[in-house]
Length: 293
Image (tube, rainbow, N blue to C red; front, top):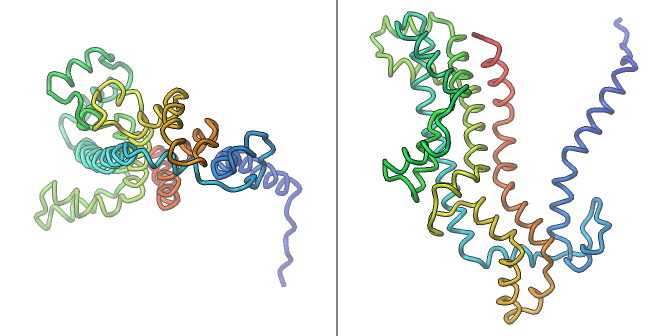
């Protein structure tokens, strides 16, 4: 009859440290959420720890009464889904041939891509290039210049190299072309790295701010990060409040801080909803893609 092994003393210390680290990581998000749904007048007095003080959604109501936020959300979602799809598609189609060892130009092309990780053209040449293609003030200016990330390319390439070459050889014996081999043989067994890379690209597109300021000039093409910048601007809030105060007395009680908290929640909520579904692929895909090669 086997004996039950008692945990080592360090086991409890390690678990306690991980729990404390988890709390320190999650608590700022929780505090922002609780502040955003608290009564603004009570929240201004401080003292919010785990539960809201009072309850009010006036900050969210004021934020979503501006029709511009829906346009900005639509533009950001377009950039997120279309941009991520093109990113993954182009990165995979570039990484697959360069992962095949018999490919003649594999080494020089890989070195050329690695060179772009060390040196870039700079902001002004990049802007002039985007402008020459007529992409300025279009959403494609936010997608095309960042179509392929060299870092994500190497992660995907290393993962493809770890796939047994016998799979490709058997596909070739059945008459499969390289395109068929990629999409019907390689991609189905590479879902972890594809999910991880898609998450990298998705977070990049959702959080990007500077390129939207640089390339987008019209309000109709404004993305969420730029729109929320305007919401966080105190003078903009004051003008909005003066408009709303004539229609609703409750709006006059909204504080600048409560609007900031509601804005932060609105900006991070989509990523918080998507991440749990990709987390299991994220760790596996990144680790395998990083070690092999």
